[in-house]
Image (tube, rainbow over all chains, first blue to last red; front, side, top):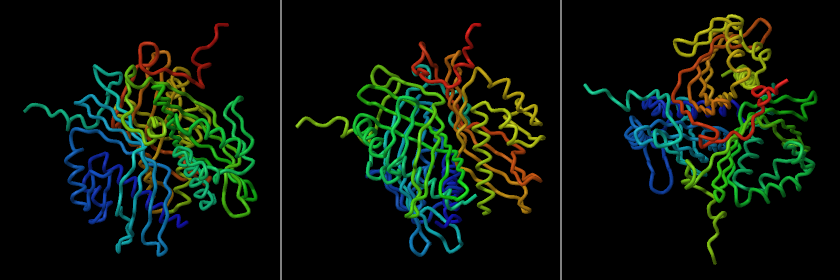
Length: 160
Length: 160
Length: 160
């Protein structure tokens, strides 16, 4: 195992998740190749960084809190060491405060990575297959209350 | 620290968890020594791979969704480097759709590993001590709904 | 990346979390520098190991079950390699059995580490910023039941 390359790919994935969940779209773009494929089932497929980030920004920027927790990495390299595949266990949480909805899910990510001319690894393919998913109502009609939300200002702008 | 051996043992544990949770019993068997000890409290004890896998297959094959998320590895090697111990923090989820039950638990795994003649690490002892466990009712009478289940076909076979 | 130092700092963080959650205050003290800064927002600030451990011991010893699950480490070293910073994704659970309360939260830890004269890394600064937090009622009036508690003896001392 090339432990240095494994460590760099793990850092890449953690940076991807942090950028995604803190809604830092420029940082997120820096983790992807321009021609990245992102495949979530049959109906949610993107074939470029611009299309993928555009969708995420549009969907996640204001209404949703997300958390993508990635663990159990199993990384394999191609013979020339310039590309790799990765399987990860995902545990994700999606909170939609205005709809009073808390979603928890489990999936396996199947990623591909490529080593650029600049010596940096980037994600060239990502996507996952769901294992299970639960939905819990939140708020006054539900059993769970949201008591802190770092992005509340984005979600409930004050009247001006 | 022998980082290469630590990385191999972490991969072994991730493969064990993935095989267990995807119900891949052949893959699971390949992660264990034939004389593995599996100890879960006083009353659930196995002293061979065949007995342990037989129990898991019988218990988990159809009715239960499980997820074993392992983190915080603390691996220590014997002086000759051919065996090791590992402490892991486990966060597990068990879902029983037909009973409308969702269990979440926390425990510390205490494992032993041994390096085979073939150069592969395998689990020679596993088991954990529970820290806490919660049970939440699911479905119509509960607050949580199961909205996706990769193994639903196994659990609700169509009438033929 | 100095993988050996990264591995030692990860071990340090896992030992910190295990000591904290198993209420082993001596072990916890061994992970901190004497002048550690611990900063949780504006109102919860400590500037020494004694003050920080005193607070934790007083707050967590008997009434609370805690779990601090740390993942996604991003470790950076100073030029001389004798200090480092770390960002981690925290997923924490706090259970207060006697109040029937289950808290789940997410945050990013921002830590500093320093390499001692004895060759051991210790935490010299810790603290996190909350992303989100939910509270769920437990017990007879709530939807979640606590079915196992390793520390129940501490919480419900027998009458003597």
